[in-house]
Image (cartoon, rainbow, N blue to C red; front, side, top):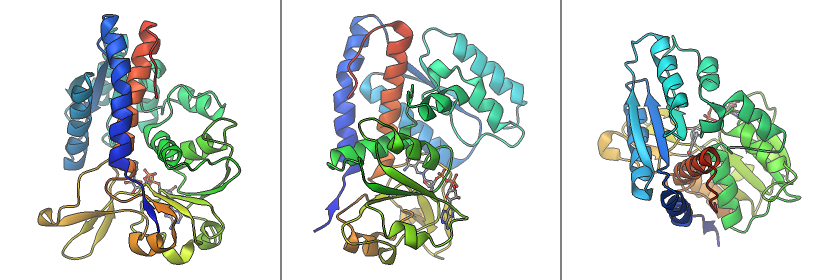
Amino acid sequence: MTDVIDGDAVAAQVREDLTGAVQTLEEAGVTPRLATVLMNDKQASETYISMKQRDCEELGIAAEDVRIDPEAPADELFDTLAELNAREDVHGILVQDPTPDHVSDERVLSAVDPAKDVDGFHPENVGKLVGGNPRFKPCTPHGVQKLLAHQGVDPDGKEVVVVGRSNIVGKPLANLLVQKADGGNATVTVCHSHTDDLAAHTRRADVVVAACGVPELVDGDMLSEGTVVVDVGINRVDADTDEQSSSSSQNSSSSGDTEKGYELVGDVDYDSAKAKASAITPVPGGVGPMTRAMLLYNTLKAASEQTGVDVTLP
Ligand code: NAD
């Protein structure tokens, strides 16, 4: 019998557990505030921004929706970020990916005050994470770690294979899982597009985390009986033509919508993997909602640290 890990339910629990922190901040006269900055006109990004705004409002975090014309000069974005950095009432800043080609990704990552960098992508925060003293754990890897904990899967001593080495998922997750800390102590292998014989790695894993952006790449033949499978992937598959594309977006828990002409699939072939796995996350409803919940967590952590108001975080 395979456990289907309910990310929606775990995320709801995390949000519930965060209400105390919001209350403590409010009682101290602090309204936690997240500014989201959008500089593209992609529908998927629009959807993600509105979900993040709604999540904040539901929890009692003020959400500021900053829009910048994708055609505007890069300096308009950097001036806006400088203003947000300087504002005492803004505790978290998130720049929605992607920004236009004429804006340097590298410069964006460094332009957000590291104390307000709730994505955890600023080079200073990456350094802290690698050094074993994370300030903000990036939301998706943190969400994966929470899901494993909720499932009673302690990575300590386990073989974990992470498929994907991106800066937003694969690498930070590997760093979290190797740390000498609760939720860490795993033996981690990071596989990527140049890995020779991916299946040889996944077959000897206790836990496989798929974050490669290749629809249904990891199937049951690549797994041993009893593997815990975490599917980070979110791919829009054309419902009519079977044409597939990986979403570059950072999170989603919206259902696939064949009426819109697409459905969402993960990086794992769900049915064949489920037949082998002891536990598996679905898509949607697995990692996606956790990513959103951990953004709320990081925003409250940022507000607490900037104001000196102690809060309890789950
Ligand atoms: P990315 O494109 O930046 O990185 C993909 C990684 O996978 C690369 O490191 C590449 O080397 C590796 N890869 C590609 N093909 C491979 C193959 N055949 N075998 C092994 N490795 C391979 O992607 P990303 O931003 O890390 O996102 C990965 C997936 O997760 C995407 O589907 C994305 O939409 C999804 N995602 C979901 C969430 C969420 O909240 N659930 C958050 C972020 C990303």
